[in-house]
Image 1 (cartoon, one colour):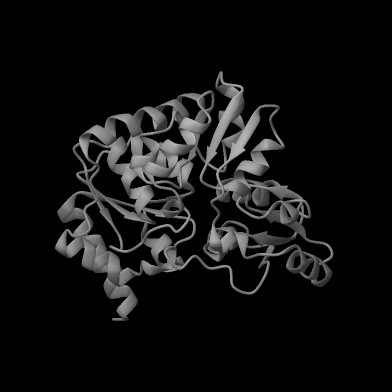
Image 2: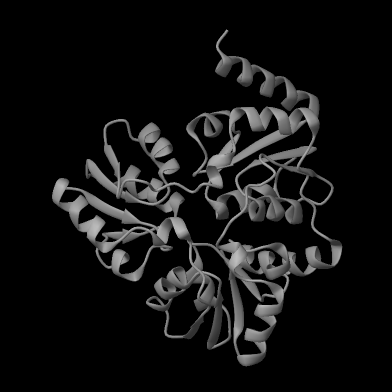
Length: 303
């Protein structure tokens, strides 16, 4: 029996034993996406995690996502698929710094991108994702918005609202690495292609694209489009579901390495080890949990 097949059988057995559900983000390795009960972007995973009836959630993603699952499922054990799967973007802001910014802009509502730690969400008015950012900003009463921590997503949202947006200067290393020049050379190679990029990309990259979309929106766009060739500007894990769902279409990643090192830490082996030992349980302290849940619930009520 192949190593791969053995891992899959082991995981199937452990799922029964733990009464577990496995969820995976679109940026996970293809093997990992294929063993998951549900694959999605962070908004879909948050929404799905509200209704999970299981004793254990095995979260194949990064820590802030597992924290959200823990906040939305009191009483459920949430295991993160790799102990060190974090997010450098989320790490760019801490509570002390956020409190300083809040003092500087007392009129502003804090809108926290979901790519933040639970303690940061607890200090915020509402959360948003790359799929619903503009909708959230436009739905809340405040005219002034302190947007944390991704300046590129914040800038993109600022083009979809009349509100005054104050942008905290964080960014995603993976998405910010892609340049306008790379987009232009990709377009020369595939002149017929539709260019889809993530709103975490730089403004000049978004300006060259046909659409700026979250990963789930990219999947919907590709499925509904009559176009046959697409250039994709986001983490290359998304190529797997794109190709799987659209076998008659061609997808090429823009640039040569579009990889989130933290998303790629999870493998079938780490999933097996995590489930066998029940390790990497993610918990959120009660006082943070209640406040962070308010910000997430506000988002889910709008979306």
